[in-house]
Length: 322
Image (tube, rainbow, N blue to C red):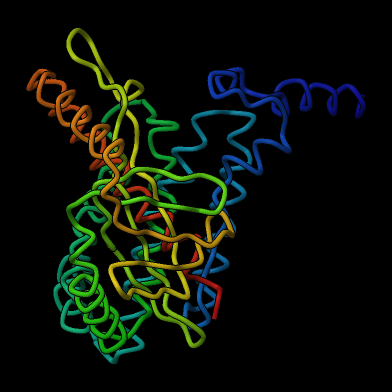
């Protein structure tokens, strides 16, 4: 009898959900590696947050067997945001009555953060309220997946002092000024194995640790093909090239750094070669001859990919690396 019950449980509850086939997930090991977003935290994040997120990891793991559990994992993650907000307020000596809304707490905490960081809070609160007050059965599934990394970033940033946040934002402003010459032109990006022709290179984020400064860069490549008409979606478009840089040096119109994504040294320098100028002219002609609709879709695609790449920079390089 016990064995029959065990077989029933195994066959009903411990079988892979076929909906994961759409993402080419073959087994639980691949799923754990590619889908389960692991918690990453710096040393000032309270242990309560770390332990709460371990539950999220477990829920994500169980969604291998039942796809809609992914939504439950995300709902839990939004509630951890609420806990993190309350714990940070307590750390700073901000007292509130029991019925104080999350929005009121956010407003007070903004005084101890920066606009760049706090601008994300309202969106998380609205999503949290959406999951807390459902109106019908449904699930969003894999569309939520990218947001787990962003929530982890938000937890971590809540427990960074305003002084340190402002320092990094000032450092980024200085880096942007130093790199202004790379914003527009024609350059070769060399990673020691491949060379790419790019027309723009911009630093978008910076994070300081005790050991070094890490910066997130976007390089826009010169394209040799681009949709001209008809139906196009994001799968038709090339994405920018991204780099997580340390040991950065900019001098004599040249940039050198170590890219943490590839583990390779990269360099960026100007080019005036005729063949490269001709390739850039082809790129510009392709863009000019395309339709307004396709260009708008392309710009939207670039914006989405850059936003998520920025999230991945913080998630992969900035937490738990002190």
